[in-house]
Length: 356
Image (tube, rainbow, N blue to C red):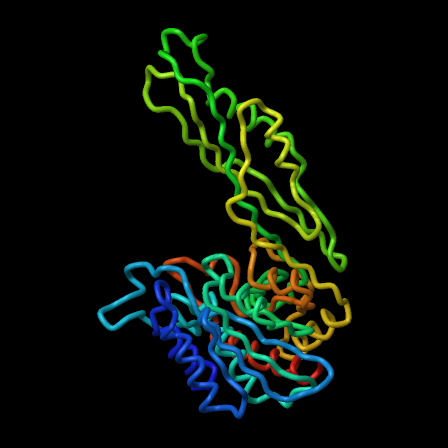
């Protein structure tokens, strides 16, 4: 069994959906035992390690928290980890303890061309709280490879390099009116009608779009929830509408226009930044490493999902996403990852570390 596979099995077996401290402890302990790097834990639960030196710094980045497992992914001893048909099954195999393990082994074994940083963030599934804390604490590598999924985008089984991904802005429109008896609708002001007018504004908005290193990235804006009314015979005085927007680098929908509707207020609830690689040479270096580790023809691609890469890019780090997970695997009851792709990613990360 390879070191990457053994380490993945160990990390996946540790529950980390409610409290990721034990998983972070395991990551830090392995790095201290297996490397001569300077390893530290911060107050947010992140694990940061550094080795080598040079005029530039490259970070291999992941996270050790996961979403809640399905019932069949747990037993009395913790998380269930099973290997069958060339794949490792279990919560966190794809998102993203498998690629995290690959990055740890690459961090240990690489002969880095620059200062090599390893970062495993806490709280990625809670909006990137660990990444934001680390950035605020001065973690600012020149370059980063974030090990979120990029396999299977251009072709099945091929590990591509994502040069951009969308962000996510979640917001709420609240329409307020005046309640009255439904038999006298003119005596009140129907908040649901005002909300419907605001929804019409949302439907007419142009979704953001851009191009990153020749790859098109198109966002979206859509209403996902409506909550209003208190009874069948009451004119509603409040109606809330949830809007999910997928942003692109440099582009957002003009949602503030909904406030042109009388009685409507717009509030942003979550704003996860998009990512765009700002250095074509670095993107090509990572793609070259991807080509060296597989028979397929990897490409530069874009991702629809927000990751911690967005926070790093927003802070000035030149960033790409490259990892073992395939579309449709993360957060599912059948989550799994291909064993050979995990080992490919370890070689890929090592190749990047020795080239930048």
